[in-house]
Length: 326
Image (tube, rainbow, N blue to C red; front, side):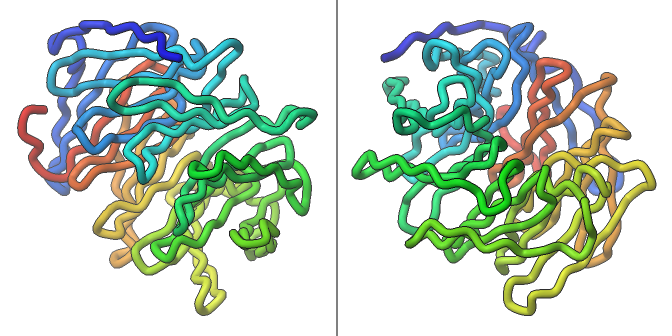
């Protein structure tokens, strides 16, 4: 199945602003998407394009920053895509809450393949996904579920979370281990990828609202805490926790760790993206040029950090080094 539409927005409309960040020499660029897209998650592809989930319109979008073109692909009836990542096969893998399914979109042909959850599975409110070290995709469902899709066999599993509602962000470590966090349950959990069982790990801050999680190069888990406003770090080796908070009323939505182990966060109360340096323990702020940007999620390529502004129908790029042709 493949249904797509291409929009030629053009460089003049696409590149809305370029702002200098004098402290670190980084630059911020904004790319406009079709009105009403409501981009939720974003995933830079290997060929220089960028995938995004247009949650409000049930489509997967693909932006080419060099030409200014946006292509949108229909994912299926009732689609409401939440997360998107690029898999080991180079395809876009989408967690689709509307279809209660994982969806694969081929990067070359744009062919859409739907992996529905087993018949009788209740609404799971699918959120995000990550591939383990064996190439199996693991997903979370905020209604109280998580599960897996084996791309080789097509097997789809659904597992009830040990503490019910809340599984949201999920990530793989460099060793291929899988961890998720529970927004409603305020905890971290490690999935045994062989048995499928999840072991809960309690953070020291109660009711912190752990929303997203990401691993650095050493396997430390970084967590954005929506209710406490902290970014916390858990070391699985020592089982020790640390936490930092940039402001009294912070609301940390997403977290991402770049190739230099710098931590990036989307922070709603100040309408900004934050960069946290674990070595200096200092935050650097990149405010949006429009109100109510609502950056949902962030991912990167080397030298580039991308976010999805769901409130403004834009993608945002923070270039950490010069990028030719953009």
